[in-house]
Image 1: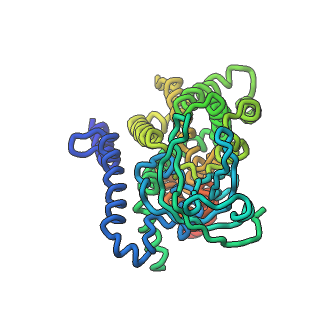
Image 2: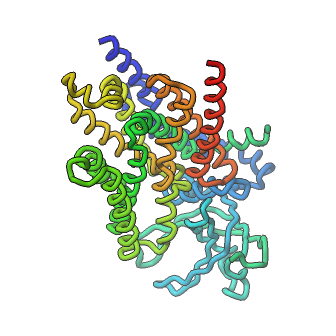
Image 3: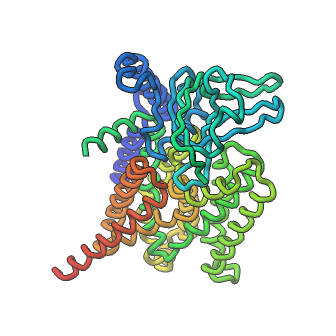
Amino acid sequence: MRQIKKILVLLLLTAAASGCAEGKTGMESLKETEKSAVSELLAENEGGEERDEEKNGGVDFDLTSMSGDMVYATVYSMMAEPENYVGKVIRMKGLYYAGNGRKTGKYRHYCLIQDALACCTQGLEFVWGDGSRLYPDEYPEENSEIIVCGIYESYQNEGDSGTFYRLKNAEVELESTEPVR
Amino acid sequence: MNEIIEKLLFYMEYPFVRHALAVGVMIALCSSLLGVTLVLKRFSFIGDGLSHVAFGTTAIAAAANMTSSLTVVLPVTVVSAVLLLRTGRRAGINGDAALAMVSVGALAGGYLLMNLLSAGPNLSGDVCSTLFGSVSILTLTERDMYLCMALSVAAIAMFLLFYNKIFAVTFDENFARALGEKTDFYNFMIAVMTAVIIVLAMNLAGSLLVSALVVFPAISAMRVFGSFRAVTVCSAVISVFGVLCGILVSILAGTPVGSTIAVLYIGIFFVFCGLGKLKGRRE
């Protein structure tokens, strides 16, 4: 009996540590903690805009100063929970890639990043400036290392029900002219 | 040093980093607790076999375009664990041979399925990520995170509730049976817990490295301590320490999470070997 009591106390402590506080379920509580953490993080970014502008040049999420794992996980999070990032200024470093849209026939431009094992690749689409540049003459060679900085936005294609995400009004810096193989 | 701490604090602002640490600690606790039992029962390699089964099932789920494979992988791995741990000895095939057959069969079948029915263009990436983990723990979906936490709490609770029975079945199953204990039931429970923990731990270390989480903390603790309780507690401490350090080092240095944790465990193992020798000399 004493042992069962001990176990119950231990379980309660574990549940409390997992976020089951104030009569809420673990899931609700964790969800709220996560949401408030994200809002705090974003509020900090919004509230401290002037300070950030001085410090980061107005960049909300600077992925160029992050480790490979963090860059990969952040880009994944941008795709999985885009609502936390839409409207924010993102700066990232990766490899340039151009892809031809099957339906539209237009070229789309991507900044690709890889995970720590270099086997998984994720890409973020960007529109360089107002999108008036001509491909391929005014774009870098594929697999060139680039730094892209732009505003994260959602958009929809005509005749396509899906929502897509990209960096608009992007500025592109060429890190290396030698393509990475 | 200040720079590292600042960077770490900056990374901690991201919810997915905090979730990874929380889930990682829970998985580490589970795997270390059951790891002692599995090592003592000479089932160290079961983790490897079951993780290959989970890999095969993940391949099926991926081919079927399922967004969350955990709901399919978990039941299939549990059934495999029960078959391997309970009925393997009655099937006329040695336990290790049965394990090898299931392990290789699931790995080969899974890879073949992924090749034939791959839903995405990045096949090598999908396979590599499932086998080695890489950053899986940092990219858990919200649903998977809650599931991991709930299952971890359940596994820890089961272990604590049935601690004495697990102890009895681990050391002398025949004696426990002679005393009237339901050894078959406890073996079944161990099999279910093992499968659950292996599936959870795959998020941390990937299918090929998952055994490191089960074996190294237990073996390291056994170098220094002699009693079941002391080994279990020490194993839990080593496991949690290794996983926490492993995740933090990985996100700071940009290294793959699973292999970083496994290498840390190897280092800890050698430290404990040294401590064990020192302890032996004193005694």
